[in-house]
Image 1 (cartoon, rainbow, N blue to C red):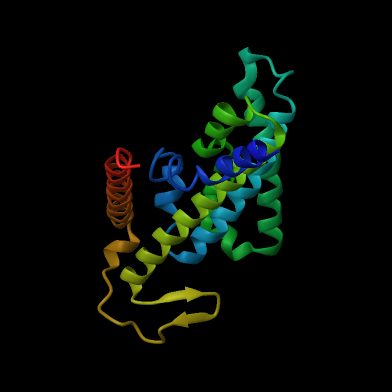
Image 2: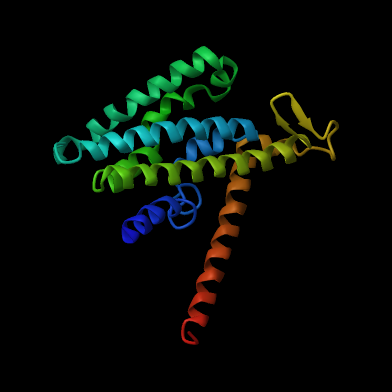
Length: 215
């Protein structure tokens, strides 16, 4: 039981650092760069991905023993398309403004590399519960990535952060760098964050190697 819990815990947390979709695996780059002009955009895009990823992982895992290897990718796409349609219809009905902002990237979740990668590399080979934890961990990590990138770009590009009707601070703190709201700004932010994470992970690894002989 303890081993099973440890396995489930690892399947969840590995998506945040070791198999971080954005900073370690570098998948799902299109929505990462395209929709992260604000914190709120990143949040809702991430929520949509979590829903689709969890749904697809569950059904891929459930059907993994009956899906022929020769046609598994087309079947994965069909399984992924169902929750994507649900997300699209719900956002159109209840969040039309956000749907218009996210635009084509909502239906393009069907071919999002994160979804296909987790289906192929994990859900197709593991039980349902493990696949759920994998989806939640990877999805939440991706959402956090988008929110962090979006917050940085929004703040540097506007001098403010907006969450719904709440804007902080009321007046911009500095002269905004509008370039941060453009594609080059997205690449700059992504590159800096990726470099920082790699430095932290590398230093942690060296520290662990240094301390191991002493232990």
